[in-house]
Each structure stands twice: as C-alpha cells, then as structure tokens.
Image (cartoon, rainbow, N blue to C red; front, side, top):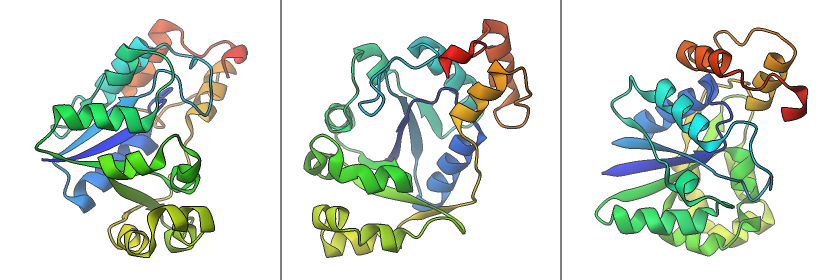
Length: 210
C-alpha cells in the first residue's frame, strides 16, 4: 500500500486539513491517508489546548465516513515531544511492506532542514509536497539553499513533479479557537460532528487557550 502520513496538532481538525488529505490521496494514488496527531510539537513545546484523546476523537468524527482515511494514536500514546524521524521509523517497522509518503505543506517543507535528523526522515519516507493554487511556488521553495542542499537536485525536481496541488483554503486551527473563545460561529469550517463535539465538551472557550 501507499500510505500518506499526515502529521500535525489538529487542534481542532478543520476542512482545510481534509481537503489537503483528499487532494493528496487522489493525485498521489494513495491507498490510505494516516492522520497522525502530535502529543507535543517540537516547534510549540507546550500542550495543545485540547488533550490528545479529544483530538483523536475529533479526527475520528471528521474522517469516519472516508474509507481511505485513518487516524493513528501512535504519538499520543507515546506522549512527550513528537519527532517525525522517530515516528516514521516506528511506522516503517509496522508497515514494512508498504510505501510511506510524508505529506508536507510549504511552510513545513521550507523548515525541514531545521527538523531533528532530516536525513533520517528522507530515508524513512518519500516526501509528498503540497502546493496551494495561487499562493505557493514549490519550485522556488526547493531552490532555497538549505533545503536544496538537503534534498539534492534530483530529489528536488522529483518533489516538484509529484506535488499535490490543492485549492487555497485559508482556514487555521488557531482562527477556529479564537472564534470559539469570542463566541463566534465556526460553521462550515470544520465538519458538523466536530463542531458539535467542541460545543458538547466546552473546548476552546477560554481565550487563555489560544
């Protein structure tokens, strides 16, 4: 199987995440997109506003109707700071006969040289880059010196050729949290089941959780 690994905080999951996942599934011929919520991101270093189990439950609600979408508790169960290289190596041991593709948005791709053990990441999985129509220039990003040095010219060229092109849906989890804290609607920015879960559990109501 070809498995797209889609990491992030997903706090909360929103329509932008789901659209990216579906574009990647279709354009890259993925058999499965595996949503992988982080316990603690190494770039944030604090606990997300919603706890791990709540984020897993929201992802399950958001993806439950799609036969090719799955949710992994790998990093939540392990706890602590989540490092992509280590996670991919563990997943690779479990999915030894499958091909792993790490889904990366433009900002994540640009910062990849600063991640822990980026060379191990490239060994453990192929990269599947996302380009948003009218916003991103993936070819220009891959020419940035640090990333170009990490990838090499052949891999950079292949990354551009195999990229997933997605509509520019500007939805951010932080915007949803801010809207909820100020009593505003988040309708149509996250699946209705997730919206109801957030309301039922009183998530993100305190502005201090932003």
